[in-house]
Length: 65
View 1 (cartoon, rainbow, N blue to C red):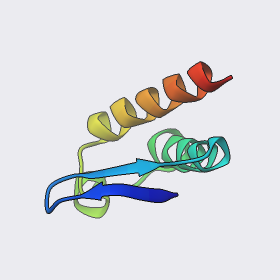
View 2: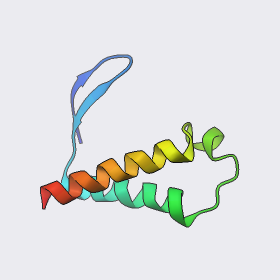
View 3: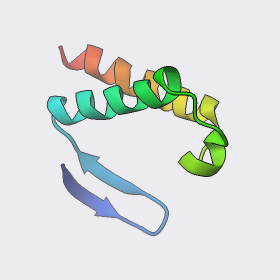
């Protein structure tokens, strides 16, 4: 992963396909494989937001293939 730009509110990064797979797998496990009590407290976002990010990452992987 390489950081291109960084501000207090946003970062622009470059990630490899392998790194995207890692993020995809971790989010998939958290969203679908584990029952996490107080999901939003522990993850910092609601389950729906994490699931939406998972969908975006999954779509990126599809576009890279």
